[in-house]
Length: 494
Image 1 (cartoon, rainbow, N blue to C red):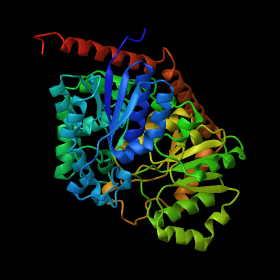
Image 2: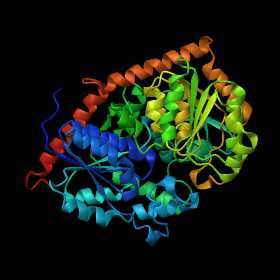
Image 3: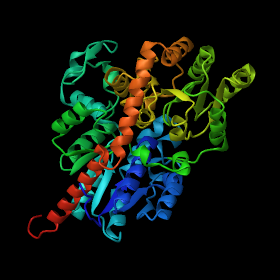
Image 4: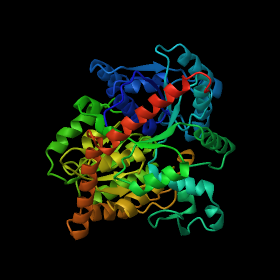
């Protein structure tokens, strides 16, 4: 199918969280590559993180721009610069950031009304339900983007629209999620850490999201049909909406710079690690990164470090936030000296796409955020799963039970983002050691797991090629918006 001829102007509103911001920037570039105009609107701190990526896209003659929309931080009691969930002074401030984002409706609409050319379509994160009202007032379509894939969101739909959790008495009891193509067993807390939540603020936001979704023009998902065909089909049915799987969007990054700076700027150590990887044998190193919002207490970080060391398997460990106590432990125990030659610790933002595509990487310890999960899948890498909150336990079940390309580390109880200051050790050093050994084992089970991972990696790349499923879905999405815009412009029909 030939791409539709279009002068559409898509305006994207990503959530101020790396797992949402990064794929929406990639999506914007993919849309711009089809000839449309794209405007990405976010706050100044987040704009600074992605500015170099947008600059390179402009140099490549893409019609894309980045506009800054200040957050009313002072009005909600947040310090200057706290514009992303990973910049908050404490987890208790998460609700303040949500309140600030909910106050953007009027300034965002004022910005859109003076855009030239006028916006043709809004693509917004589901957590911005107010963009639905803005789209109605501007008489343009709105498309919804959510962070998770179709499997996880189908599970969330089931939990939200049935009484299944009311029937479960114990928080530790595993139950079979009803209405799924595969047998998926989870506990009550694992199934319910993404959705309405327990507070009035999260419940109200989730209900507004669902209400706004009812009149949207469709849902765009960072996934590909071959990865979860039955779940794409079922998700489309239950939502009764067009669902366009257009990913893995990370594969739009072709240059070294785009891969390295995807989402944030990388410190020098982040690049130096590539030289270290160059010296390792193929598929011999385990990459360890637990995401931008996942949190390890000092005690848990120590257990992780000791488990990595005990495994005697080469590893590269990116750790974003460290406490003074943990740094003191590293010094006193001379940990980094002890692991020298076998392991490498790197502080700061990881150039994850670059690392996962390196020939030395043979495994990935991940928090099971969908962004990281899909990047691991795209690289054809088997994973050790260590979920913590949100839909991550559902993604773990997808990796383990559906794709069969992972090994559980044994995390059972969610560590909610808003409760991350606790000091409990959930995963012991022996759990880390055992999971790594199983993942990297060269037995029949390990070989089969790696073959499956490679197969999905190849599928992901084909989906993004011309005539691939995701490439076609992007064409279909643009065509649907062209048709809806034309319909809305016919007099007396709206």
